[in-house]
Amino acid sequence: MNATKARARRGASIGRADARRSGPMVGVAAAPGDKSISHRALILGALAKGETRISGLLEADDVLRSAAAMRELGAEIERDRGPDGTVWRVEGATWTAPERPLYLGNSGTGVRLIMGAAAGAHVAASFDGDVSLRARPMGRILEPLRMMGVEAADREGRLPVTMDVCEDLKAINVKLATPSAQVKSAILLAALGADGVTRVHEPELCRDHTERMLAAFGASLSMTPDGEGGRFIEIAGGQGLRACHVAVPGDPSSAAFPLAAALITEGSVVTLKGVLINPLRIGFYETLKEMGADITFENEREENGEPVADIRARYSLLHGVEVPAARAPSMIDEYPILAIVAAHAHGETMMRGLGELRVKESDRIACVEAGLAAIGGDVASGPDWLRVRGKGPGTKGGLKGGALIKTHHDHRIAMSFLVAGLASEKTVEIDDASMIATSFPEFFDLMMSLGGDLGPV
Ligand SMILES: O=C(O)C1=C[C@@H](OP(=O)(O)O)[C@@H](O)[C@H](O)C1
Ligand SMILES: C=C(OP(=O)(O)O)C(=O)O
Image 1 (cartoon, rainbow, N blue to C red):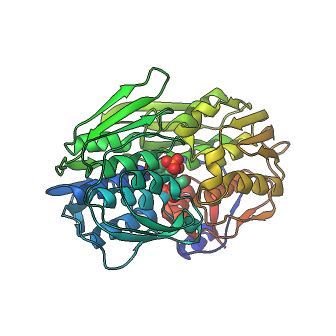
Image 2 (spheres, rainbow, N blue to C red):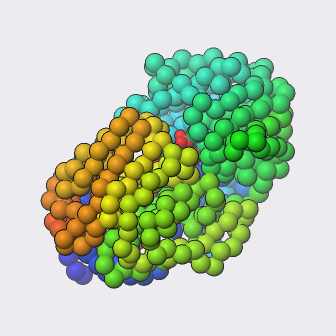
């Protein structure tokens, strides 16, 4: 066993980790299941009549917390290993008030969608999370739920939150103030239990997995363009859901890390198979192509109502670009890794419309700026923008490395800076790799199988 493998074997429950200049990164790997779709499959399955079968579920901490919450609310959930792989079986139920607070760990998607679903299912519940989740805004969910009639106690718009039952939930007509699929989804899930037709105006389109999956579970909802790039979604209350089979595609947000590593380490060519290419999720890949990346979608196909492809990336000489604010919802989780790629491009990459990054697992604008500056990047930021000036790849450009990066309980910051280390002059170390398990538990194994020299220290 070589030294890299030996340190990987030290386990996934890890603190510090580091990454060294590596390459080439070469190989083909399956992308881990999509986190957004995995949460939704469990939640809708738990609400539906009958047995929902889920294949390809992402078995990461965030998703497993949602599964645990569904059990607490009354659903029966089993994990079976069959001849064709692992299948999760969810037997839906009439939800009942859980005995303890639902603890969603680090997961914004889990807590926000389940708050909406619990309101729609007419159950009382309390919600809590880790130190990062406790710092994130929940007013954006509580406000529409209160308009529907829910009474809830919170800690200045943050967790812990305790929601009462509202038997006569009212349909509402709302315009989303922030382009957030989590807010939109919470409202749609609550609307299932409301009296009348709820109408959500989404001025900027964001991921539509809830809408697609509600339709797959037999709900009727309508989507109408607003004539200005957004749309109206209408859904009537009182609809029951019917169990179905969900095949979870690969996560484009996770695939971004090995593919970005290939783009910035000389001689690399990496393919990630079965990645979701829903148009509302692929802003990162569009941006990379504009930067001159040799990145291709191969074998495009439709699986279970979502478009997927195998994505291949080759080491490329990149140039900086202006990333328009309008693209932010379709690549909202990919800015940290884009900033690392941009540091290896020639010239300036300007990213605008990033206000939402301030309220993710960490303040991602601040974390990226501090981290990149510590490893020799030329970076600046404003309230909702980030600018990276790259010096080009390789030994004359690239990043110096040689620093310990603070990850602030944020998996995407952790993975982004480990990828940076693969193409830096000196080792890049991160203070805490444990959060990587919230979205991408196989990260170290997959990156090492492609040739990356990284792991726990
Ligand atoms: O709906 C979802 O599954 C998600 C929506 C996004 O959050 P917002 O809707 O708050 O932007 C994204 O950042 C998160 O990782 C997953
Ligand atoms: C923001 C993220 O997730 P969540 O909001 O579910 O915590 C993410 O995965 O980058």
